[in-house]
Length: 356
Image (tube, rainbow, N blue to C red; front, top):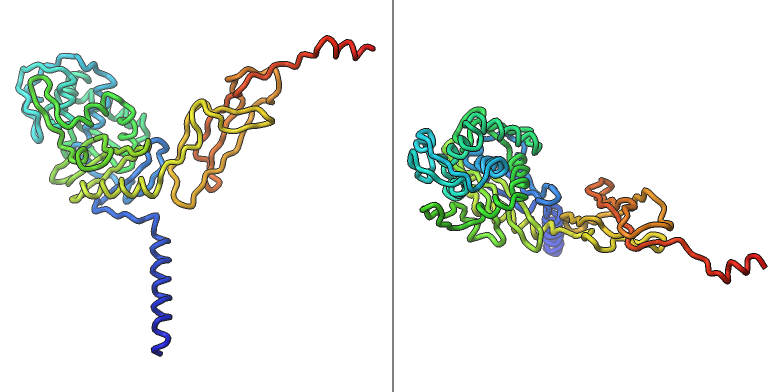
């Protein structure tokens, strides 16, 4: 029996290693009731937990408020603060009734100080009323594919008709990160504007490598909510946690996991030769990258919609490159002819020879 013990230990070690390898794709866990980690450019979900569950979202609502305001308003607009805005409950940038600020100043107060008062002032100015602005918020949500989301106010105060999901909030974050003005404001740590100095509540800006912002949130009913984005080596990831008492650490763990386990592989680069067919170089009309786990590989196939024969001008669209993972298409890029193909012109001597 004594001789068999080392063998048993060896088999136990093998089983442990096998379990670790099998579970490598789920090598991160969070404290949140709901969470998601998404590659921003491709939309691929790298981790999720109850991501489709409808929940309160608190002040992460203000990502949508800012997006609608920037799209429909003008940063230089002068906004007069109403009594309703000045006396809004909860977190505040301490607006005073009757004071006048630019919309840009209010957006800093909205995203850095999480001002509920700023949210109402912005909504009244851009939407004509809070109700009119909320309608625009819900229209934008539908436009972005946020099918399990409903907004009842511009600040995130608790309401039965105000909810979203981790997945929907990631879709919102993708749209927000495409807006340069919103990113500029949300990634600002400290600013002095309109006679106010404001500091961002988002601690991830100083403790997570490559963090670009977005928004924190808290109410007693919603708990701590957090939406963030980080960029490393040209790849951007979005993390969302809802009802999470350990959100700062969880977002850092999610980003470390995602960038290590799913690095983006660039399959095509704008203006670079992607393939060759019948001796003709085919150039990518756009860039394309996809996050891949260890052992995964994309397959590339060509779909040409015309023959590569003269006459054919350089830059002419000739088809598409299709990228697939495990037999499922994940993207495609248009292909352009990489050189001009001119008709062959016979020399005068060769023509004469034909008639001798």
